[in-house]
Image 1 (cartoon, rainbow, N blue to C red):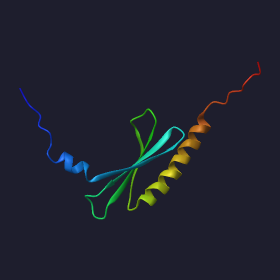
Image 2: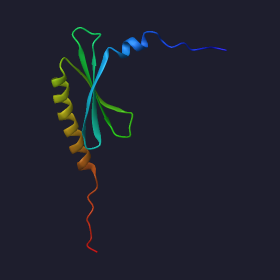
Image 3: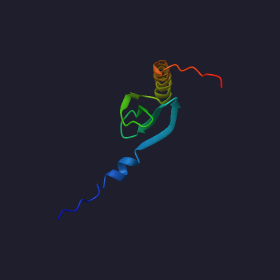
Image 4: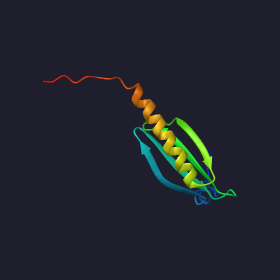
Length: 94
């Protein structure tokens, strides 16, 4: 029988990561995290699509403004690309 003990450093690692508000554009979203353990601090930006675990883009920045600017541009691009792939359907009057 084996017993898995919790990692005593896990809680302290969580306290070093700060989450920021999610950005969303269409079915795509960007999550931001700041890692305070690094010097200088690093802001991570992870972009995904709703309902998927696939990471479409992951980037690191020195400022939250840089991470947000990059995320907005990428979310816009992904949403436009997605819209172009949607089939065009016509609506018939009833």
